[in-house]
Structure formats: structure tokens, C-alpha cells
Length: 177
Length: 176
Image (cartoon, chains in turn yellow, orange):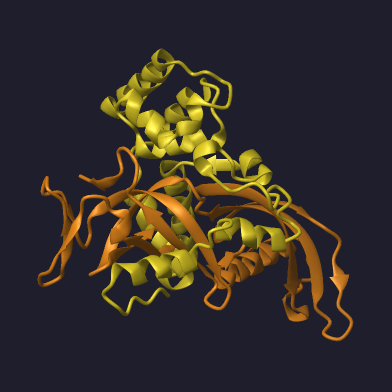
């Protein structure tokens, strides 16, 4: 737990710098100690904005908040059928996550959720990029590029028109949900 | 980001739960797996462990010498939550201090946004305190904030992640 005791901002800076060593980010430091996480080499800095998130995560299937909401709600219903007091059975992690995804799902209807994934899949996006877009639902091309800078890089040259078409398709689903 | 990953796991079934009818085995394994999942909370490389979605395969059980339990190596698919450096996420403010605010995002409860990383916002003391900028945009308790993750840390003792985030970037800040 971070504890801030003094009032000077220089002290706050020091605390932040201690938390984040200047050489490399903590998450890649912890990765180098686990033999399983072969994706991130010690030299490469993790940076989701450039899609540098480790090979195994690039290949993993990412889920949008709305998809997770459907899955967790279904699990919760299953628990309700099996016991009288489902809240006792679920872990804090499950409970907090269910609350979060329900609140931050842009699309509630299962058909709409399926459509969102289908539409975004038509554009050559990495799973990670697809989900960030599906979660944050940027309204303009500029916002989309700010949220997922890697769509303009990585040699796929998504031009602004393609991005605009994608955003329009997404907003149509919202309208007719 | 929520991820669906396939993971190997070793499920230990105590001898007294083993049913003579093999059909109950799968159910016993799923239940044990979910219990262990819930207890473990999070893993350093996978993130927070949320739910088991499918049991892909169950290997051959090995009887453990001293206890008589059976160990089954299984492969299952589960949902995890992990925050990546450089990722843009949304969270809710739950605590306001003079030098920054604490946010929650998904299962992560300790996300710190320092005032140093809130360009143009200054602290306004009051009953609960808040940060405000010249355009009267407020950062206070229960406000939704869009941020960028600048670092994550795994706390072994508490089995949880902490994160450091920033508002430096376009389209970041309070979201109405």
C-alpha cells in the first residue's frame, strides 16, 4: 500500500520513482523471474500502446467488458441455482469484476455484443486493440488513434476512412440495441 | 484487459471425494478447481483469476503416496484480468488525498493517480476533497476516470496487483 506522509511534491516524486525504477517497468522485471513468461525478454519494455505486451498475451484471446459481463452473469446464475446464498460462494475478485463489467459494458444485449465483435473482426486488428476499442467506444477517428495508437503503426496502415467506417458501424449497433 | 487463457493446473482430489462411479469425477474436479481459483485470487504472470469457463482435458490421475489423494493434471480455460503498461482503461475514484487519488478498476483496488500526473488539476480542500481544473472539471469520489497505465506491481504478500496511472495524453481524464 502506498503511504504518502509528507506534503512536498518532490517527496511524492521520489515515492513514484521508487515505485517505478527508471531502468525498466516493474511488470517486465517480474516477468524475467518467471520462466513461464517467455514472451517478454528483459530488453523489451512492456508498452500496450505499441502492442508490446508479450507474445503469449498477443496470442491470447482478449474479452471486452460486455462479453465478460455475459459470462460472469451466467456463472452467477449457475451458482444461484446450486445454492441459496450465491454471494457467499463467489470470491471478492469475482464480485468486484462483475460489478465493474456490468457498469462499464457499452452493449448489454447478447446479439449486439456478438455484432460488435463481428464488425471489429473485419478490420485487421489485434485482439487487444479490438477490445480496447469495444470497451472505450471512441467517437472520433482522433480519439480512436489516441486510445489505440498501435492501429496507425504496425505496418497495417489503417487509413482514417477505414477507422471512421468502423466507428460508424459501432455507433449504429448502439442506436439499435 | 480481460483475457481468456488456457492454463495447466494440478487438481488434488481427497480420497473420500472419489466416487466409485467415474461420472462424478469431472464435477468434483471442476468444483475443486473453482475453489482453488477463488482462494488463489491472482497470479503474478496471469493476473487476477476470475472464472473457469471450460475444462479442456483431464490427465491420468496419480495417487499421492502418503495422503492417498489423487492428483489430476488438467488443462482448463479461464478468464483473467491483467493491466498492461501503456493500456488505456477506465476506473472509479474511491479515495481522495492531497497528493493524488486512488482508483478501482475491475478487481484491482489499489490504483494510484498522483497529482503530478494530473496536468492542470489542483487540489481543492473540502469535506471530502477533490481535484479541479480551470474548466471546472472535477476529480472526486465516485467519478469515472479514463487513464493510461504507467506501471504495475505484483505484491506477493497480499497476492494482489497495484498500479500507477496517469492522465497525460489526449482524451484522458474524467468521463461523464
